[in-house]
Image 1: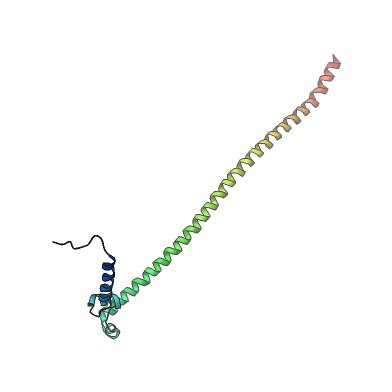
Image 2: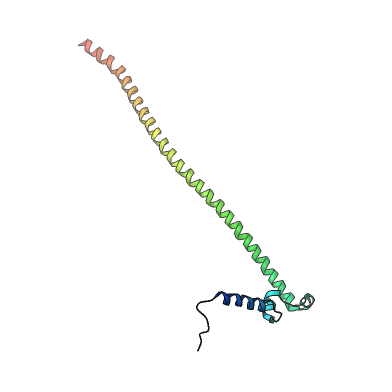
Amino acid sequence: MPPKFKRHLDNSDIATSRNSERVNLLAGDSDDEEDFFLKGPNAKPSRLKEDDKIRRLQGEVSEVVDVMQDNIGKVVDRGDRLEDLQDKSENLSSNADLFRVRAKNLRSTMWWRNCKMKIIIAVVILVILAIIIIPIVIQYSKKQ
């Protein structure tokens, strides 16, 4: 029994196959299924318009197409809004970090001011006490 397919093709085999394929493709004896896919449906438009089922189906298909187009538009809008929201959240995050750093610096600055104020108040109180106590001590030492 001879093999159905050759494993090694010659140039003559390739040329012969091209010619036979060309003849088969260009021949007018194609079947209806090939005609449908190559030329499209062969129904007449006037017949399609008269058929209620086909009109109803075309109406349903057009409704579905409209709904799908609306849904696609909504998805695109949602994507744009999500991108805007992500940009805003990134901006808010960077501003929060900046606020945290500045608040820490301000806290440190205010703590030092508070310490300086306490030291100044303590020095003023000591000076006032010295002004009051030194004359009393001097008078007391002169009396003795």
